[in-house]
Image (cartoon, rainbow, N blue to C red; front, side, top):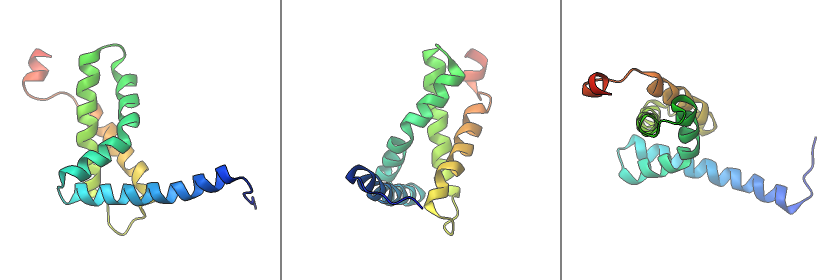
Amino acid sequence: MKISLSQKEVANLSGSGVQAESLAQAVAGCKNGELEGRRALTRLFAPLIAMLAAKRAGSDAAACAELIERGRAGLCQAAKRFPPRESIRHFRLFALDHIETAMDKPARGLSKLFG
């Protein structure tokens, strides 16, 4: 059993509780259709979405921007479908699957014809 002695480790432990609480509020807000909840959730997952889009698009900026938009849509779908009985700590893995699925879908409509 590890016992934390440094203040830095104690601060990180308390910060994870705050992060889980803010994530829970953002997911609940997005699930209820609140714009601020959606923005907060997107802000929390922005680095992950950008990294996944950059891996898929390479140096193509337009493709990267489209993948980021698809990732955001997948994130909102994950928030809407997240079961309320599950712990919020499982949301990141749940959302990752939805984000990647949304990014991997082929383009639809006119963007597929002219993209």
